[in-house]
Amino acid sequence: MCVQVMTGHGAMLRGFVRARAVVFLAMAVSCVASPRLELAGIWQGEGMPVVNFLPHAALPIEICIGENALSGRVGDATILSGEVTKVANGVTRWFVHADYEITVKLEGELVQGTGIRRKEFRLYVTPDGAGLRAFAASDGSMCFPWSSQDVLRKSMVVQTLQFTLKKMPQP
Image (cartoon, rainbow, N blue to C red):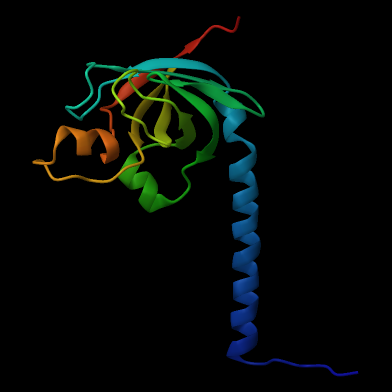
């Protein structure tokens, strides 16, 4: 039988790392379990796009958050799947000023007939009275201001100004 005894800084460092790992895992489990239940329901609103290549002044958003599913629409695109997470990191929370991040996978055009498609859309929301204060951004890249409309439509990030999602009554 072989026994390894650690003394000094090595033992203290390993104990510190193990304690941090346990705390991190406990935080991760608590963040994953509750957000869907806190935000459960049907939420509707209209985000004002910051980009100039969308033909409409507002982007309608409807999200149905259930215990095991997330569905709805962003513009004319259909939400295939998604996840709700609590914004736990202090730096991230400071930058986005939101309590929750809703990430959805999309299928279809944001505005029918324009060719503007995005695969992913993120909504950053904070409960505010009877609604959710929100802003949103899609996947994509930053483009030069002098880029063609075609390049903008195909690749630029679609962002919205702050808007409110209101909870709709259950059918």
